[in-house]
Length: 181
Image (cartoon, rainbow, N blue to C red; front, side, top):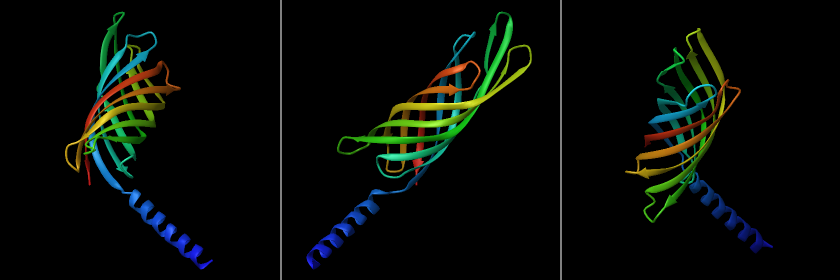
């Protein structure tokens, strides 16, 4: 009986030590450039440039979370002799999964899923229009760790917008850098 208790205590101590080592909180900050291609009804595709700033943490080498803020430039186009302008802001939360590659683990494949609030402002010649709704984000990409603290990454995301008038689907191409503490 005492051997079983000692064995159980030893296994528990090893399991706790392993799980404590598995959680390695590494906060980071970063910025990225985005090209967002939006599919809008009754209009040509819109390609908008934007920047994002983000703050996140990696919990271990396989999982992390991130909050972001994104702001786009104004998209201009004359459609049927009507000057049209559109821009957007977004903020939200993304979950990241990493798959380190190779022995050095400097390259990682990454997958991301998240949710964001999108605020679109537009002007179609007849006054200002505003629209606001949620976007569900799925993406994949690659990250290269230049040093232990500095990494660059490229991500392609599909965004499905809910309750945004005309903005149903968007593709986003991002290139950015992050600094881990």
